[in-house]
Length: 197
Image (cartoon, rainbow, N blue to C red):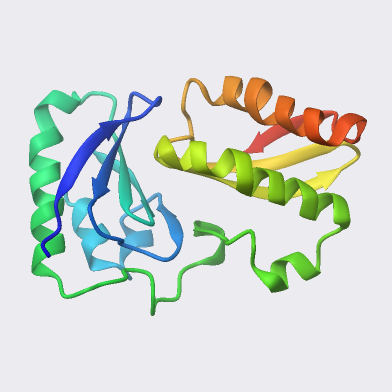
């Protein structure tokens, strides 16, 4: 079966989500520079377009952040066709399976056993809530959320992909994530803040 791609807008006007009919990766990785993408030729090729600022690869989609001086109407079809062509020319089934990527670029699996062994009970509970309630919605918008830390009632998360720099990410943090965590965990939670991805 051939790859087919459709484009889907995200809440971030600078980011478009290109969704595949087949899985692309088993990790979610953000590429902020062309140099970051060298280990995945398909992603590296996308940086050949001068208007591509960053690329986020996840299970079955690629989110692309464009430069502000370019309109989606000018580049959307070109990018969609280019991605479709690359995917159908490659023999790759999983673009992240056998590569070593800098750890800070990977959105770790929050269910990773080793990762959870080092966590407190409160941290594991926060991670589970993020996995169950927040992650699906954020991925639906072409982004990702990663738990960073929890201390003195403050939950720190990292927003990546379409969520990084999104005008509505503050509302998502305060009215979505923070409200949900307070609802679920009570006065253990004082605030949720985002770190730069």
